[in-house]
Image 1: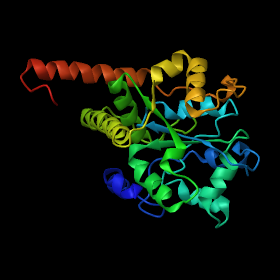
Image 2: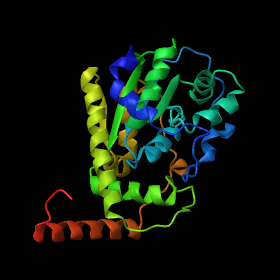
Image 3: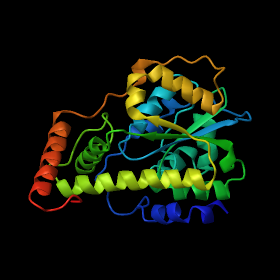
Length: 276
């Protein structure tokens, strides 16, 4: 069973808070559930499923909108985020919400995409165990990372405090520099990336490794790389920049990063060690 194969990911995923649990400070991006983003009902054979394997604040939301803007890659979102699932169940009107998502979010060329953080892997494995229509081998995998891990950690710390994980959502929480929180996010980023690499090695998966910095520099080139990897290179693909989301980083992120580095240098010079 796939679930047995990914015991580690499944155990981590069970720790997430389900719908109806304690109140979340994070504001959901409700636009993702709107019918305006649906394609015409897809009833074909499909055959071009892919997963964007990511870590928090790696730029996966930007990449997902980049692909969606072409009209050829489905609409890759966090369909296996447990917080989102009840809203999809509501839209499906008590029918199988996975069938509903596949029908509504597969582009006419049969391409369907998912965004997946490592913490959501257990839910994805459960889906593959229970859904007879798809298997692990039916998916292509795109692994997105950021070169600047510290900036990623700073961004993750800010998002946790503000409750806003994308630019369309208003920041609500109080923002305050927190070295320990940034360290925690840095550690998690590196740990989750290692977990993804373990998953790829364990299952002998030929994945496409992308850097977010390259996505920003050469979006059209990156889109064509993904098209070739997923198997839709013959499709007519044009990036519509109007769909793209603006980056959230600003001077506050830069200030937190600068302060973190200065503190690290000071700690080393005063004999407080290299690891904290």
